[in-house]
Each structure stands twice: as structure tokens, then as C-alpha cells.
Amino acid sequence: MPATNSENRAKRNTVLFCGVALAWFLLDYLTKRWADTANPGALLWSGIPGVLDFRLVHNTGAAWGMFGGSTFALGIFAIAFCIALIVLAMYRRGKAHPAEMFGYAMVLAGGLGNALDRFASSYVVDFIETTFIDFPVFNVADIGVTCGFALIVLFYILLDKDETPTDSATKEH
Image (cartoon, rainbow, N blue to C red; front, top):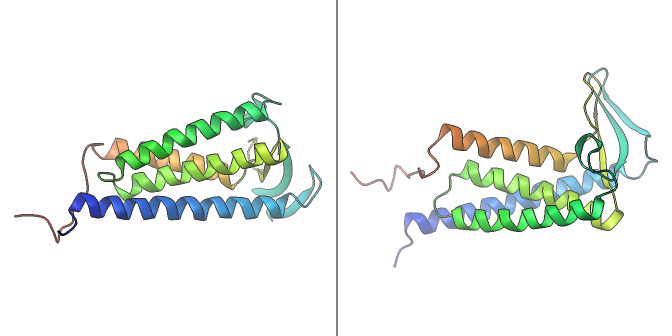
């Protein structure tokens, strides 16, 4: 019996979700290992003068110093959130648009990347510093969470959340 559109979409979305999550998680992990070879506060590399530097920070809280010293609790929260996100993604995989799954994967990878830091080191390795604006130092995981969440929100704003993509080749006339 041939696979249905929903089954094909579910397979495609599962592969997309797992592939993107794994790739982003590895990118985050490798960049953090590179950055964490220096002493905290050290300038790792002057990226774009007046725009971006790479400076190591060990973050025991959340963004903007909130919940400082709450590393373990933030790690538990991140893991619980990631489990819920996996359940949602697997529930949606048969009807989700690839952009939605891409967003879920980015958020998952970022959440897991920072949780791994929290449990393994008792801090998150942050190293991307914007110098043109006063903004917290961040990392690749944070980019994944932010961009993934923005992609999901845009998807839900721009497309009906119950609308599923159709293959023009299999569309019935």
C-alpha cells in the first residue's frame, strides 16, 4: 500500500527536524568548545570592528543576568521545555510545514546546547558580543532559540496553522 501524503510529510518532517537539530547542536557545541579555551573575559577574536567581537563569558543565569546562579534550575526547565517541544513536533509532523519543523529544531538544539553546558560545567559558554549596541553576550544556541522561535511565530502569523502544504504533483483536480 503506497504511503499517503500525510505519511510522506511526516517522514520528511521527522528527517528535517532531526537533521537540523543535530547540525545546529553540533555547531553550538563546537563553537563553545573553541571559545571555552580562553579565560573568562578574554577577547577571543576581534570580528568586525565596531560591530562584533568574540569574548568569553561564563553565564550562570539567563539573558541580561536574570536568575544569576540558578544554573541547575534553568537546566531542568530547559530539559522539560525540550521534551514538550519534541512531543509537539512529533504530533505536528504529519501536517506541519517544513518551516515550522525547522523552527522547532532550532529551538530544540539551542535549548539542549545550553542545558548541556549547565549540567556539564555549571555555566553556559557565551562568546558573541555585539559592540555597536549594549546587548548581552550570547552563543550559537541562543541564536537557534531566537531565530527558531521567530520562524515559528512568523509561520503561524503568515499561514493558517491548520493549513498543510500540498504537493502540486499529488494534488487532486
